[in-house]
Structure formats: C-alpha cells, structure tokens
Image 1 (cartoon, rainbow, N blue to C red):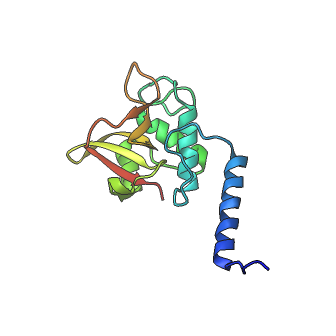
Image 2 (cartoon, rainbow, N blue to C red; image 1 turned 30 degrees about the vertical axis):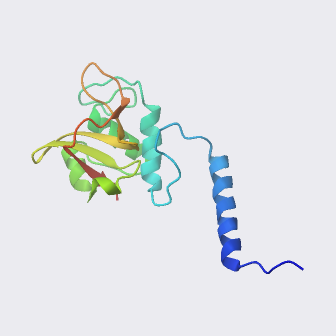
Image 3 (cartoon, helix red, strand yellow; image 1 turned 90 degrees about the vertical axis):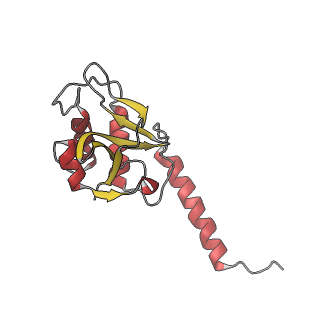
Length: 157
C-alpha cells in the first residue's frame, strides 16, 4: 500500500506541469530576461516582443514606425500593437506610468533617462540591465546595456 498523497504537493506538481506545458507550447522568446515571470504584465511582455522584432530598424527623429523610430516612437508603437496606448513623448510616457524602484523592474517596464527632472530618452527594459531602444540619429533599434544610473523606471498600468 502506498502512502497518501498530500493535496498541496499534488497541486504544486500539477501547476508545475501546466506551466511547463504552456511554456513549451508558447515557443521560444528571443529577448534576454524574458524568463516566465508570473507577475509581469502580459501587455508589457507583448510590447517587449514587438520591440525586439524591430531590432535593426533605423532611427529617425519623430518616427513612430513601423519601419523607423525615435525612442518614444518605438515604445508607443510597441505598446499600441500590444493593446495599450501611450502618449507620444518620453516625458509624457513617464507621467503615464506607475513609477517603480530599480529593484522592482521587470522585462517590459519602461526605462526613462533623465537629467535632473527632465526626461530625455526612453527604452523598454529587456532584463539583465539591458534595454531595447532607438538611440539617436545614425543608429538602429538595438539591445544595449543601461549605461548610466540616471534612470527612472515606469510600469505601464
């Protein structure tokens, strides 16, 4: 005769099996830091995937896609395609997000670069201290390490 199975253990095994099966069916995610995170917003994760797919697109001031972008054009495009509208500029996007500390950031959150109180650049956090962003004229959308501590983080609500 076998020992009785604890219902909590059985439930956690079933939950783990369902999570693994769901991940296997969902396919592979190509952006770093996109490990399954139960608390990450589905809209933010979709926006990160969309921004990832735009890597290599040229920077163009004022461009909002689908073939070229400036920094806030990329973030507004990615979130719009994911089902959430953001304002057009980096500063307006900052004021539309829930501000979070660096320790709480997750893939899909927005990273705002600032000088004093002035927000001048935005990208999508990709995990491992990296962002997807459209840097400046003459560059392309790319994944890059965050190069400064002068950043704030915002979570799309």
